[in-house]
Every structure is written in structure tokens, then in C-alpha cells.
Length: 313
Ligand code: ATP
Image (cartoon, rainbow, N blue to C red):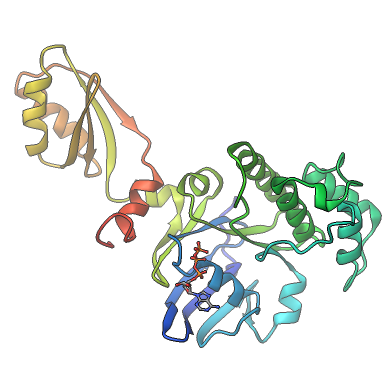
């Protein structure tokens, strides 16, 4: 995607929502850049579904500001929702209607749609062969894909999806990821999808908003977040020198954590510390045979930021 200088697709400020004594959203802030594929990541109960329902005007917020596609919500609800596709609740299609008839029927309730466009979105979501089968006979993955087909039917500028791979097997998840990538490339919509699956967000999204207990704990481009704070390296040493290296490493400047792996150590370093660590080991008589940068994982960052893994940053 390109980083847009224009209005963000979504901007949320100090959003609050209570259900009785439960504070589901406790002053949420975030923005989603126009054109992004953004992940909304958080543990169960963090407030993701509530946020999406508030954005879509399905429940009212207690307080706070929301902007979608550059205008304020819910004041401009009708015009914004006309440009937004969503899959937030389970798709409520009719079991005895075919996929085609469901899209045709529900898709033309409020706005005209052509048969060609219905076939186009069925093809886009890999459902051409199943177009005339009864929805009740679709697999879970096919049902979710028909939900996505419905969400993109009117060529939305913004696509909001709540856990789009929920209930799918690993193969279905891969297909859904490929599908969303294709939709983003072909239809150009900004995508905002919730997930509690870190790996999924890391593979699919270029932007991420991480929430916990109804608050934003971090947001930004995935690449920037992964680079911030720590780097992971594999340090390989000559045979017979593992004990010596293992004794030295944890005490060296810039080393945050260290664990033994088959041919050496995996170490978490402060950014830029790898050269100094190498020098210190060599200076102490250890032969470093390789120093290999490892790709950081969003999981580490996520666990460090949410209650799943300890103290919030
Ligand atoms: P999950 O991944 O489990 O769906 P989530 O991040 O989507 O979690 P929400 O469903 O938004 O979280 O829920 C946030 C909190 O608000 C939870 O503690 C939930 O129990 C509570 N909550 C949500 N909707 C309601 C409701 N209608 N009535 C009472 N409590 C609610």
C-alpha cells in the first residue's frame, strides 16, 4: 500500500462504552491510514467487536469521536455506510437460497446490483462453482467467503471484518488471507479486520492497532513496530566454545535475553548492539562462526504489551 497524506480511513478518539458495570471501551484512540490493510489485534474481551459495532452504528457510544472516510460518525452514517462493506455478525443468509440468489436478493434490497457484479464477486471469492448450490450446504469457509462477497458487492472504500477466519481450518485461513490480499489489490478498499491471531495479522496486514482492556496499547505500521525496541540474532560459535560464550553473553552490553539453540545462541539485543557483542566475544577468545539476524515476531511484541505476557509497555 501507499502511505496516504490524506484523511485517515478511520480515526477514533477517546471512545468509551460501558455495558452495565463492565467498561468495554475505556478511552480508545487509533487511526487507520487510507489504503491500509489494518489488523485490530487483542486478546478475547479486549473490546474489538464492540469497537466495530460502534463504528457501524449498531450500538451507540457513551462518548468519544469517530471519523470514517474523513467525516464524523454517526452524523454522516448513511453516506459512510453506503461506502462501507462489513462482516461483523455471522452472515445471515437464507439456507435454501443459493449463494447467487442470496447475494442478488440481499444485495439489491437497498441499491441496484447487476447479475454480472454478483458473478464477479462470486468469482473473486472462489465460489463460481458453488454459485447455484444452496447456502445451507456450504462449508464454514464457503459461508465466510460468501459474507466477504456480500461485503464487497457494492465496491466499498472501506471493508470492516470481525474475525474473518473464525472457525476455519488452516487451509481455509490461508485461502481467506489470499482472498483479502487480492481484494485489496483489485478493489482498492482499506481493510480493517479484527483478529486474535498474531500470525495472521503479521502475514496479512501492513498496519496494526493492538488493544487490551478497552485501550490502545500500540498502533503503527507492522514493520515499524517489529523493529522497535529489540532485535533478535542467532550467534553461532565454534565447537567446544558454547560454554564460554554462554557464560559471557548475558552480561554483555545490549544483550536483553539469551537462550541456547543447537549451534549457538539466540539473543535479543538492543537495536545496533550486534557489532559490539561480536567484538566482545572475539576479544574474549570466542570464535564467532556466524551472526544471523532473525525476523522479529509480532507475537513477542503482542505478549509484551498485553496481559497475556506480563507488564504492559
Ligand atoms: P472476543 O475476541 O472474545 O470477541 P473482543 O475483543 O471482541 O473479544 P468484545 O466482544 O468487544 O471483545 O467485549 C469487550 C467486553 O465487553 C467483554 O468483557 C464483554 O464481555 C463485554 N461485552 C460486550 N458486549 C456486551 C453486552 N452486549 N453486554 C454485556 N457485556 C458485553
